[in-house]
Amino acid sequence: MKVTVVGDVLLDVDINGTASRLSPDAPVPVVDVGDVRRRAGGAGLVATLLSQDGNHVTLVTAVADDDGASHLRRALSGITVLAGEPLAPTPTKTRVRIGSHPMVRFDEGCAPAPTPACTREMVAAIASAGAIVVADYGRGITANPDIRAALSEAARRVPVVWDPHPSGSAPVPGVAVVTPNLSEAMAVAKAAGLDASGAGPMEAGRHLQEHWRSEAVLVTRGEEGAVLLQAAADAVEIPAPKTSVTDPCGAGDRLAGSLAVHLGRGRALPVAAARAVEDASAFLGAGGAAALVSAVGDAPAAVRKRPSGDGERAVVELKGLGLPSGHAMGLEPDGIQLAASVRRSGGTVVATGGCFDLLHAGHARTLAAARSMGDCLVVCLNSDESVRRLKGLHRPIVSQEDRAELLLALSCVDAVVIFGEDTPEACLDLLRPDIWVKGGDYEPEDLPEARLVAGWGGRCVTVPFHPARSTSGLAAALAKVG
Image (cartoon, rainbow, N blue to C red; front, side, top):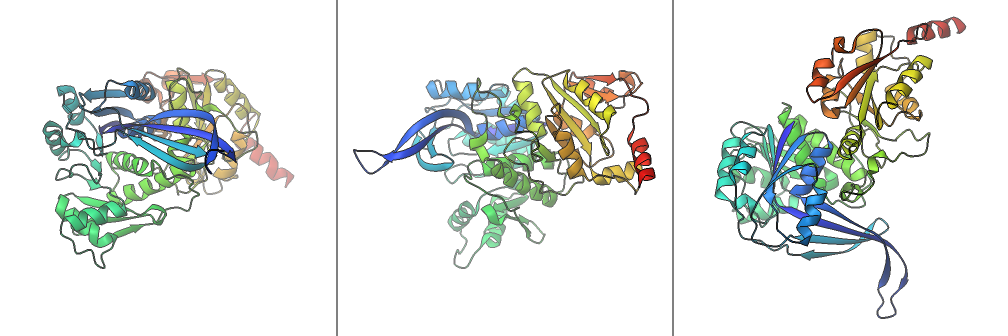
């Protein structure tokens, strides 16, 4: 999907280390620095996450000409950045962590800044987007009158999700949804005239939806989920999946970006909001922003594999494709993020698909052949419901969780993506592999996915079919044994 992110970029610096002694100068821990990681924050984090999901992202922002900006540009490599002239240095947030525990944060240059300039290219990127995320971090980009006019016009045609900031600009009227957290919503609603005594997220959200003249307001409440308020509709409380969170940094950015994509794909707002909350929870459960690869030159974390036999390695269910949510993902990025990471590093992404109900030698040969063609292999796996529709009520024999775990036990499989539709087209559109591999005796151009894969410059490849090796034959043989 073509997504434009509009907002302020920050430089996030993570200093990670250990502490085993106190300083002789004062009773404070001495941190032995293990590594220093720099990554794009603010609107830059939103753009990074959306790009890792396989979207075509353009970032409309302002970037200074200083040392911090040079780190930002490296961290945003591969993303189209359209930047106006800022009138302030790069805002930098430096976090010191001991193990996984944040200890202190230093902010530099984060005060409100004068309104930066806007170019025709920036306005054009807003006008041509299929979905828009506004990540306002109070640095002035959303105050530019040309950008506000372009966003107002875009809101009439495409979903615009606005993530506000206490010191930022008010959302333009008509945006699809504004996503304040609870403290932001209460503060802005009180300033806008709400009697805060006894008021909660529903009252604040209703007040802000009218005050901002937005289509909806989604008030986020951390581990308690979110509340969705729409005009002429009942409030919808959205629970958050239970997850272990060590650092909530980036949750709002993950939610806003996911919400815009779900809306851009035509999903109803309550459904899109629920899935965005799930995406944000999964993001935090996987380590949040601190777990991201920080800058160009770092080894892609997505291609590091866990020890063989860990069934939670790089498995993801595609929400929105007919599957229940809540699959445990472990600590590594999912298959879509893996594909994006390998592609950014110049590698070749290979994908294949099927039911893989009973793994046999034919499957193993096909998968090994596919993996030999590139730098990672992602398997698109039919869900249980998808298999039933395709094969009948007696199938699958093995559940989707077990099928995924068995596939991941093979050294040639790097990730598994479970999809719920009858065909893998929607899954492929997210992965965008360089090579799509199928087993069989037909010509590659005859594959039903050939035109789709060719659309992003990929190609289809077939590997030889192995006779007398099939799931049906294996199932029949097992039935005789029983």
